[in-house]
Image (cartoon, rainbow, N blue to C red; front, side, top):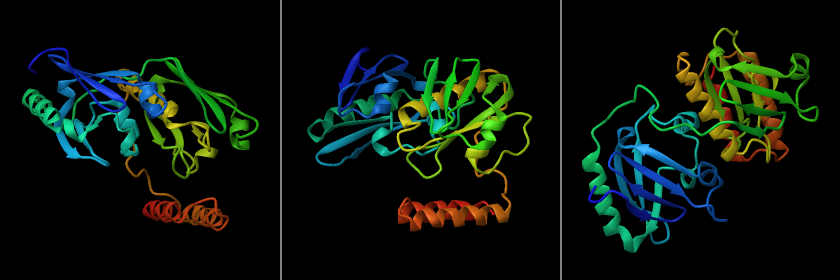
Length: 285
């Protein structure tokens, strides 16, 4: 970069350019996405980036975006493409009149990037522990070594009550499955090394907590998932983020589609959510 310590400030964040990294500081204002406020600041090594883009934004803005390498950032791995655009921690939105300055920094940054392709390990630090959040059916906490689920009598299923409160040492896990609380059937599921195939529905799985309106929000549950995932990788466990998962029993899929249809008819699920989720369920057959 031209000078270490140069700062490019945009809406909700500022990027400070250093010799081997970019320090991203997020604002804490009322309009700042809650995920950014929860992250505070992140130091992204240049080795974690594969590219930089500058594109026109909405309403007189330009968007500078750093492109993280697959596997370099536990937060983005846990998110698995589910973050909404305005919550992307690698986007810096600037007034359009600053496009020349943004282009200058984009070119400077591109010239310093030497890595491409998937990263062999996480290069961006995970969120700090301890972390905790309230899901719909229980409280999840993580101290860096063990994940604890404590069930709520108001939300937990009888299967979870029967199983009792749960503790999962990181060494017994192979990964984390995070489904955004902003979609139907959002949940956080822990993937266990020696466990049998988990129940299809997260509300029946003692290794999962389910989200609901106001429970398990993105800015709390996603950093939690990222911290657990990073700890699993560091422990030497097999890195695993499911892509599609095992095939499900057709009868189970049919039952879940029927239940989804009832929610749709009751107005609890939008047309779009119904179509997307039905397609996901059919793809599991």
